[in-house]
Image (cartoon, rainbow, N blue to C red; front, side, top):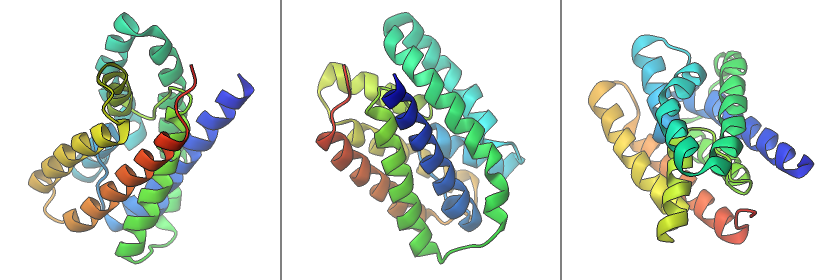
Length: 191
């Protein structure tokens, strides 16, 4: 239980730092529910962490009905990571790294953070949990599933946000996908 809590906490911190130190200062987009939360921030000024919680609710209700262990494990990750994303938001105003470094650095931090959470059958948002549940039933690598969802969200961001850096956002989600795939293939989720 202590190991699981440490993994969720550490993964949440990495995700929140990746978003606030690299993604938001350069107006990049992530994929999945986090990406939709960023789209809501850029277009409507909403808090991304709170938006992630609200948008993840239907997926968590699905997990409640069909896979309760994922629901219970995932709920902690969702709440903690969303809290840290909004708590660390002031960091996004401190400095801005060059956009390519931000794409790669943010992708690595987020990918490692997601991998720590997936190792405990947790997630930072609904699409990670959805990908984990689909992976369990289809044997498709969870990183590949997350990548596909991320591409869809990036395309949506491209349509809605004219000043978003889609090319660099694409680089970032590729880095997230590769990092998550490698890390989850090395460390399979615990039973």
